[in-house]
Image (cartoon, rainbow, N blue to C red; front, side):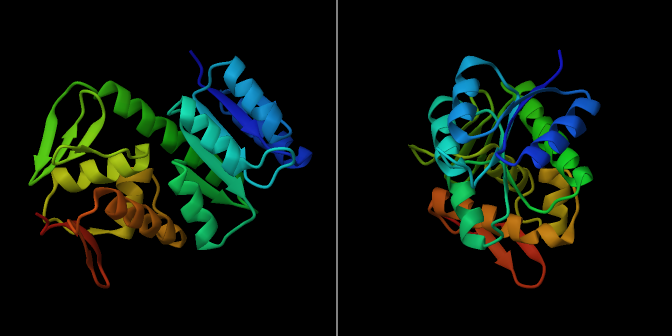
Length: 225
C-alpha cells in the first residue's frame, strides 16, 4: 500500500509543486489550502505523513500541529519561510519531526520525506525487540517508551532515535554530520542547527546532563546520575 501524504499549504504554486513531486515519487497525495481545511481532512482520513506550512489563514501551522499531536503521532514536517531559531524550537517543541525552510529544493523535500517515513517505519518494525538501559534511563522498544527513573518522558520520533543511538553507543562521540546521517538519513552541513535544537530539547526533557557537548567535535552520552 502506498504511503499517503497530506499537504497543508496556502500558496497554490508551492502546493502544486509538492503535489506533483510526491505523486511522481509514488505517494498518494491529499491537499488543503488552509489550516482549518487541513485539520478537517486529517480527521476524516488516514495519512502516513503531513507536510505543514506555518503561516496560513484561519489556523496557523503551529496550532494545526498541536491539534494533530493531541490525536496522533503521525510524522509532521513543517514548511516555512521563517528561518529564525526560535521558530524552529517552537516547531520541535510541538513535536514536529522535521523542519524545512523556504525556498527549498524539491530534491531536499523528497529526501526529508523519505527519511522521516523510513524512521517511522523502522520504529514500528523494531517494536517489541528489546529494552535498553543506561544508568537511570530506560528505553523500552516494546511500547516505544522512555523513562528516567520512574518518570515517563514523551519524545518525538527524532528525539527517540537520537537517544537510542546514544544509548547503544555510550561514550562514543558523534559529530553533527554523523548524527544527520544516522538519524535523519542525510548529511548536509548547513542543517547542523537542526541537530543542536533537537539535542537541546532532548536534554530538557530528560532533565539530566547525560548528553555531553564535546567542543568542536559533537556529542556523546556520558556522566549522568
